[in-house]
Image: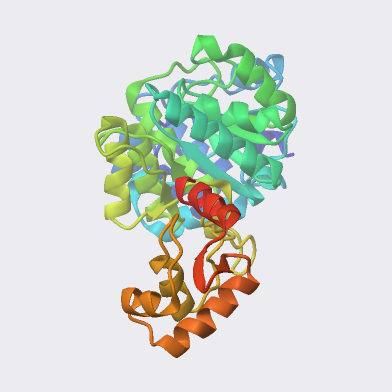
Amino acid sequence: MNVRLLRARAYLSRVAEPPAPALAELVAEVGPVEAAEWVHAGRVGEQVAGETGVRRAVHREDADLAAAAAAGARLLVPEHDEWPADAFEAFDAAGVAELAPPLALWVRGSGVLRTLSGRAVAVVGARAATSYGLHVAGELGAGLADRGYTVVSGAAIGVDGAAHRGALAVDGPTTAVLACGVERPYPASHQLLLERIAAGGLVVSEYPPGSVPARHRFLVRNRIIAGLAGGTVVVEAALRSGAQRTASDAASLGRPVMAVPGAVTSGLSAGCHRLVRDGALLVTRTEEVLEAVAPMGVHLAEPLEAGAARVTDGLDAAAARVHDALPARVARDSRWLALESGVPIGAVRSALVALERRGLVEHRDGRWRRCPAAQAASTRAAGA
């Protein structure tokens, strides 16, 4: 990698607070080296100056690259083969300033970002998640990773952490996108989790080493989570939340947005229900998520089983009505059954023969009654 180019990207990563749409446009036009020189000299337009003027005299690119190396991290730039160009193409197509593509990404871990983002799903949600939300996030994380999909999230307490842990539980790939420097364990309680993520996947940030987390940075980094994934699943979210922002960014990027339903009385599911009302896909299991993000015709979700089979499954309408007319414990003749079921006497006799062949009725002394074993099985199926 060209050292001059790398230093220019590192400089621009430090001087501009993401997103920096005007600076990103300048870099696309003249390249990172020339753009860095123009920014440093103050020879830029008003918009770029507004994004870089405060920090343009800050030259910490060498220190940032050294700090990253000391933490086992590296700077990934669009000129690198590992850069997930396909994932970020949608940023330019969206034409939204808040969705400006990152100028560079600081990454820590053994994974290859381009490979990890090739088949990836974001699983996000509330920090103050319920036990239900944590369970669902963990199941989705494990299910997706077990099928070879990278689980992308923000490493926060709650749904994010549960999704990462679910992927790690099956030795699957996962990527954490931070709102601070990649060498900084945030939240502190997730230090071990972040180390485990880096061991097999990646910890990613567009903020240089030493950057501290800030409220606006969490919202800004959500576009990276949405961009690195082929679709976003919101497990639990209030009406106003960071997860809602991630879903909004995913929709703006043209990616599928999915939401897990919850109790209508739960405030932490209100955001999910709003998303569904607004057009998000309701999902309840891994197979339904994969059906939404995989190529058409791949990973089609099998319908859920309707429940335990009943002894009367497959009966035609007449036989079902005759069987229903039979009392539970009393034998009746065919004329009585015709009156009770409303089925003509000839059809009743044919139905009784069919029911007898299936072991559902028995004939005694000119009358018919339900077989005790079939009656017990029917009762158990109804209870199920």
